Length: 260
Image (cartoon, rainbow, N blue to C red; front, side):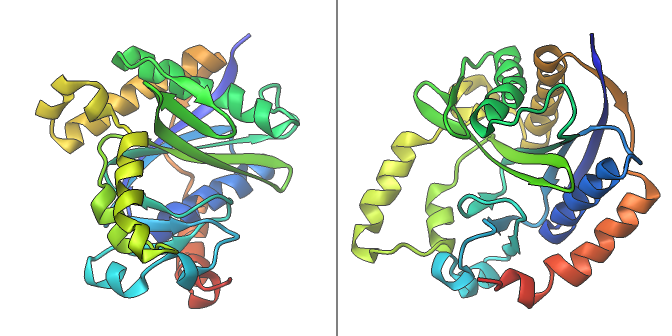
């Protein structure tokens, strides 16, 4: 049987609103006001998202981000700091009692990331699940993901890299041993890939065009891999209201951003 799922494409927004909307959707699904939801979105301006358990000043060069016009936001999910720019970002929210929910974290990632793996295959990129929460193509990371369980629901979100900006990223993040920075950058470049790197013909596409093409493939991938019956929609007015409030009162606040 197929599972009814709401499909949202919410375009490009500031980091605080993106995180606010993910949490607003989580609340709405938990309260039974919205179907389980898959959302695709982007970031404008670029941003660094900080894992919930990370220390702001230990991980991020705040001054460098400010001078480069890069936002900083703390996620409600764990994991490491992520630079968001040339990528497709998704979030998926479903109740813990849903047939697609798995109690085991590893199995949950394996199942839900099947949608991305199938979507990449539609694009022409063969990839595989790389435990605990990554997807690799040609032995290199192309997608990183994070998950939290709150209010009786799973919220998982992650990125599918369309291009890679390792040098810029390391200008924004702090490196424990500055002397080893060059080696670390070279190591990351050797271990990370993107849609553009996997599909040379994609280099002729603009970012906006490649974003749209990738989202379309991922929608088909999730529908096929997880047997989803999409209801294409827009966020509820209540969700947008909650998202705006959370963006202003929570995700924009220094108390939250510098929580650790």
